[in-house]
Image (tube, rainbow, N blue to C red):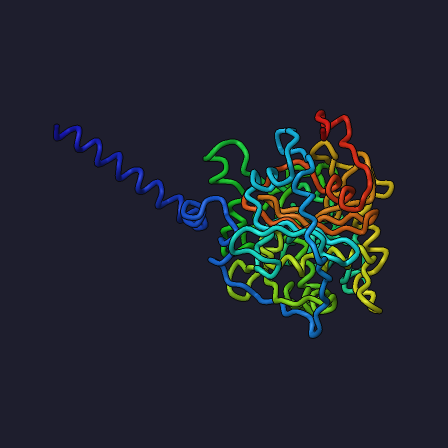
Length: 402
């Protein structure tokens, strides 16, 4: 009996020492273990930097009657099942769904506790803010060219040869060639993933400097947070401004926003988590969609250059490096651009179903905040229906709308 107790005590001590060593090696793992997959409130554990709104707010018109007939039309969920839109919202644990057409809110549904003025974390929608800032920095001449090498703007990275030949365009295209371990492959893989590490670390730059190269820059696309972080580091060095201050002064205050937004930082005065910790309200997120719908213009001010808007939301002659879903959305300049069927629409997307969708053809903006997301891509169906236009899901979706 004593021998058994001794073995158990040694085993327990070994486990304790193993975890102690693991947390010393990767201190952010304690947060990963505690908080696991982040939710809408996890950003609050980190310091925030506030982005102040416009001095004078733009207000969308609200239709006299909500288009509740939308609830009964059929859309496809993640199983490619044709379900009423109201069911789709329930399946995705929808917190907010808002449709704006011609500057008028024609449909909105909120979960208890939510409204169009509720501050919400948008996860990877944050990456699209980086794209906007890059366009501004180029227009100002703070960044000379997308073909410039990253180390020209972040000389701190010269200590690691993995960064030597990476260009800013490689980062915008998510073709840096840098190693990045995603969350797929089971619980242990998710626990030790780079996705978790960069979300929960308190020193993003320290982790970035240690990154290894696995492919030549510009050759292989891989969706990853670190390319957005590196762009942000380059932006801050090039402009001499923190990301939040630059975004505030160049974009957020210029488009009629009504409420403060925020970026989560890795630590006080640190680097903004521009890959997954941007918070704003639905009504103000819609104003970013409106800005792009109006080719970067707000009233008489060309906030973002027309050329940058056009370049960002269209692949042009570039062959898509990736695609997802039946709509074959390609990730381009930190936007998602569908390639299948109807052309011209685009979206900023975050996990758990956070969406900013823009359809120039119907002059429609859709905002979705959800707790899980029901998947698939109902936005085209909705924008066409509410505009009085026919729409049929492509054969590649394998299920008709009924």
